[in-house]
Image (cartoon, rainbow, N blue to C red):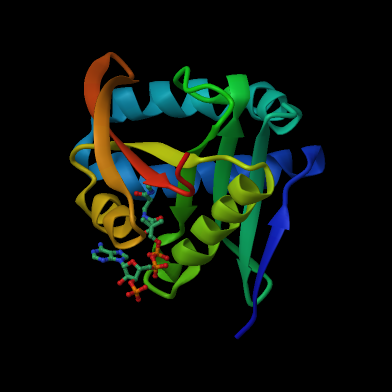
Length: 174
Ligand SMILES: CC(C)(COP(=O)(O)OP(=O)(O)OC[C@H]1O[C@@H](n2cnc3c(N)ncnc32)[C@H](O)[C@@H]1OP(=O)(O)O)[C@@H](O)C(=O)NCCC(=O)NCCS
């Protein structure tokens, strides 16, 4: 078994689109209407949008490979790329997704550690994320990884307003 993490480039846009669709569907289709799912998928993961995000100098995407197959990805944001105005001392994990068949093998933890590494390299003090309040698995994972709830914000899935919990992990004090 080999596990590798690779930083994505613009050339990865189609592969990124594929895994973004697949993992978003797997995660949310049972709890959301097809109309709202499609509206979100088309808005968030169309190629021009992903290409824009891949070339944003304040965002990074990483793929994780399990035996040479892409098994998941993470997107992190710094500075003004963050979804909330948090300033320049924090890093946001905007997306972290492992394909169903590869979950619970430690890959999520590897990707989270990759995000932590970026945060530490850039001297960030905190790492934060928004997670749908109904996504119990992810919330349990984040708690296990040392995140605590520090707030909430609204999120639109199609036309439905949903609540995301904001969870934070402090990397250094002061
Ligand atoms: C959440 C997710 C990224 C976790 O990745 P994963 O590869 O399944 O998790 P790992 O195997 O790395 O688990 C790391 C630790 O968290 C724990 N953990 C993972 N999922 C858990 C759960 N549902 N409940 C309790 N603990 C959990 C593991 O037991 C493990 O603990 P250990 O370090 O003591 O062994 C993955 O399940 C996923 O992609 N889910 C669907 C997409 C999603 O919801 N993304 C988040 C959107 S905000």
